[in-house]
Structures are given as structure tokens and as C-alpha cells.
Length: 553
Image (cartoon, rainbow, N blue to C red):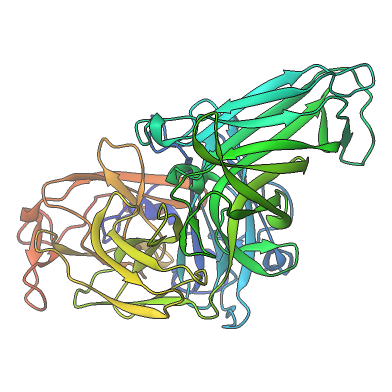
């Protein structure tokens, strides 16, 4: 399909362009526009290792599920209803967008809860829950997958085979050591030396139906250990640790000590349970916060054990264990008993605050700004309690579900992640209800206005939706200012810098590269002295940011 001409915007990404003049949600509007979509969720799938040479896993697949899918409320942007089933979301260039059925209004007291299952060849699959509330017009998700051949700091794995007797049981007492992975982000001295699994002789195993496996083939373990000393490790645990669902139905959040994901097979048959528990020694960061005492953990403290059902992201309480100092490496440790194979975490659970923490965003600037907000505990190893990537304009409100009893700090970065400019950092008491964040655009950041429209034989299309961008020559796409009915004002760009821009629309990636030259913009007479509109090189005739063929199809 050919591109059309628009009046663009930076993202003029004209990609938009192709929207061709095919009308999404056919029959909804005579003038072509997708601005009537009230709720969008844009997702990007990346390697969990921030140091990965290629940040994007190949051939990713995504399955979305939940009552909203069953009820026919979830669509893609081309207007196709997403049906119940596996791999039911189209993924393009590691990105996808889903929308709630047009004109459906989400109740304030009954948000939509959905689940994503994401997989890619050579990567560990990940489950992630998310919620769409009545105030979420555009939500961004980043789903991180673990590459077993290039793990991030604090995540380690081991595949090992253990011989079995003719009756299918362990021949003799066996210990498996999983050495922790240290990278440039986390020195080896800050990580535990190893996680240990101790299996007793005569341990026998059962498949998913409870049948004993009598095969004498070796049992194959695929083990992934997560250190509570690494931010990347904590962020990589399947399903996350924030606002998780428990078997009792109540939600909670975890302060992590350590975790291990255990998968086992015998002769190709998945093994789920065993006749006697495995003892797992988990090394703990000595700066782990014990929310009960509001102090760092110490010898003699108890710590909880939880296991996760990876299909449902539901956690089960498995009891408590005692913290001791391991004489082998002089590190804080605890032993947990494992009686089935899944994700196991030694951690502290915290009840959720009865009211959310709300950030009221204010600014005198007319632009929409992309923020990354990270909420961390003030004490202990300052574990991330919650985080969110958002595009906000003056008057928007951002809400976070936090844990009772944990004093916290908010770190607000300008951009898509914590590599952006730290604009604000503030401390709060447990369950504080909110704060106002007033953003003052730095003087070296121009406020740039773009207008975009695609003229077609059957009408005019003005794009509404997410846009990605990156400095030309870099690898990772970041979240740009979204277009709203064909217009946008952004303060994320710098003069004389060349950027790549893209949108994903109707299963196609559209990209453009363009340098932002001050000579091609005109200063606006109204508003800030640093406010500019794109004009182009011809002083007599206003131009588009990109030139494209005029035919729509």
C-alpha cells in the first residue's frame, strides 16, 4: 500500500500514512479517524538483559486472556475482535496494540483485568497481568523475556541431568549448585555465590496427572535462580511481584529475598510433584527489608515462602523459614522445602494500601510528556515497589497500588525508562495518598508542534495513537509523544539531532528518519518563547515534516 500525504507530525511518522484510507471499525465514522477509541494498551517485548546487543527477541507470540476477551470487549486497531485462543494478538516488530471496544465505558469500580502470555524461541516465557481503569486512555507495557544464553545481572540458570534407578527414583543424595550471574551492572561481590538444591536418595516423581514415573531415564532439571540483590533479576520474575493475586483471592505485593524457577522432565514427560521435598538454600541480600520490623533482615528473622502457578499467576503461601548466616560463604541465607515444580520465592508479603497513591501532573507547557515513574522502598535494598511508563498532559492523574507499612520514594524520569533525566525524587510515609508533580520544561528543550492529516479520496484521516522514536543509530525504541486526532506537541526532541520514528498500524511497521533543524520551525507568537511549529524549508509555503505520494491506495 502506498503512503499518503499528510500534514504531519513528527512522527509523521507518516507511517500513519498507510492507514490507507481503510476505515478501522468499519461503519463507525464517515470522516476517517480513530480518535473514538477511548482505551488503548501498547506493548513492547524486549530482552530482559539491558546489555543485550539485540534488545528484541525474534518470532515473539502473545496470547491475551481474561473476562474482557471472553465478553468480546478487546479489539485490535484495525477493528478485528480478538477471540479466545492461543497466539491471538498480532505482533509486529516486537510491538502490539490492543483497544477496548469503541464506546464501551469502563466502570470506576469494575476495571478490566487481562493477562498476557508472551513467548519467543530461545527465551523463557513470561506471564503478565494488567488492568485497564476508567482513567487509562493509553497504557504502555514492557514485557521482558529472559534469554538463556545471555541472562541479565543476578539471574542464573543451569540445565542438568541426574541419573535415576530402575524404579525411577534418585539413586543417592545429590546437590545441585547454581552459580549466580554477575555482569557489569552488578559486581560478583554483590551477588551470592550460588543457590543450592539438595535432593535425597529414593526421591521419586509424578507427572501432571499424579502418576508415578517409572522410567529409568535421567531426570532433566532446567533451573533459573533470581537474586534479590539485582534490580534486573527482580524485574524478570514471571508475573511480577507487585499487586499479585493469591490463592485466597486477596492481592498482595512482595519484597523479594530470592526466587527459583524449577522445570523438570523425565523422558520428555513434564514432572510436577515428588514424594519428598527438595531443600533449596536461597542466598539473601543482607540489605533486604523486613517490613514487619521495618529494618534490614537479621539472623533469626523468619521469612515467608510462596509458590506461583505460572498459568494463572496465582501465588500460594507455603509457610515460613528462618534466616541464618551460611558458614560456607558468610552470607544471609534461608532453606525452603519444595514439594512441586514451579516458581518459588522467599519473600515478605504486604497487604495493599486501601487507597491508591495518586500523582497529579501539572505543567504550563502545552506538550504531552512521556514519564517513567519508579517507586522504591526508602530502606533496605530499595527494591522497586511499582513502576509505570506514561504519556501525560496538564491535569492528568496517575495512580499506583502500594504496600502497607513501607515508606517509599518516587523517582520521576523524563522519558521511557530510568536512563532519562531524573526530574523529581521525593520521600513519603507508608500509604500516602498523593502528591502534585509540576513539570517545568528545561530551557534547552524546545516545545515543538506538529499537525498531521492524510487526505484521501473518501475523507481525511487524522491519527490517534502511540508512536515510538529513538536517536538514529541506537537500538531500542522508546515511547514518544502520542498523536491525538492528528496533532501533537512534544518537548522530547533536541535541535540538530536525527531521529527515527515509527508507528505500528494494521500489522505493519512504518518508519521515517528525520533531522530536527531549528531553521525549519517558526516560533509561535503565543505561549512560551520556546514554542515552535514545523514549517519547512520554503519560507512562502508551509510544508509537511515528510513528503509522500498523494494517492491513498
